[in-house]
Image (spheres, rainbow over the protein chains, first blue to last red):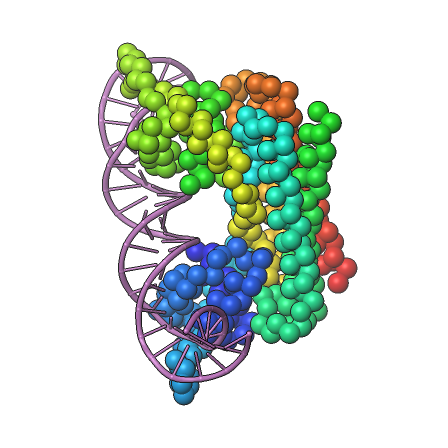
Length: 185
Length: 185
DNA sequence: TGCGCCATGTAACATGTTACATGATTAT
DNA sequence: ATAATCATGTAACATGTTACATGGCGCA
């Protein structure tokens, strides 16, 4: 239900093929999907069946034909309706928190190793995100602020990035505080 | 894979019935599951089949028998192994961010209404969380700090709560900043 | 009279992941 | 030689949600 509109939204910005979408989803940390083929191609078929997108087939020599999907007027109407629908709280699967919950049975150094691994993961992710934003090489990045169509859209996209950034910052300072606190215990 | 250990962890703290677990999961914001029957009962059967828990049946008059699940030594070993396994980044489904991404087509007041709804949702959630923690009436709350078995466990649990709190705080200040920024645009 | 609690569970569906399959092309 | 890229797609599985079912009890 949500990946449908995530895809429809991207198509409202630019007509693309399933392969393009796959790349964008894979390369983005903001979109939480793994970018696996199955769901993307399935979703495109479903969007097409319901008349929310049109499909144009571009044959190529030596390569399989590209299928470019374009949003329809009906699709735009549906998208807008969804965009303004009642928001829900974000849901997160924070598996580490469950690990930490039952970590009292572990030795102090075992626990600290676990937390350091997590700290490293988060830190790497923050580096990856900033790197992604710098890279002008990467055409077709999800929510590339320089590709926004209006000033307001650019602002919205930059704020989405800020949400992501502060989220990881928050995780980072949390895990550091936790490690420190465990030392002093 | 993760709900199994979430449940096994709780059972390592106290033997409980499926119904108890359901209540705990439902009432907790830290655990992200809906607390639906299907998954909990299915998981308990699976844990039992693999010898990670034992089952004791307590018949009652007028009510269906309670089935109390207790962790086994094998279960404890598996749990500890999982607790120390390599952590992964939390994954979140932040649907609102996708809505915001394509909200430039909406009028300023439509967008602000959406964001205010979100702000209200988040704020309500923070109130709910603090209320949950005060309520001593609620026996059997997930990660009730006063029920922790050691000082270190209490500290870990309080830090998990802090993670949750700062997470929503962060969302709250983000959405407020966003609304402010849109006014000034 | 009707609803919610206790406590178990199942059926049907929706969503998401991993791995595989084609088959030529290009880079290491 | 080996792997990755292009571009489509399917099969099998894992996970998660909603709604329903039993059946007596207590409350308004």
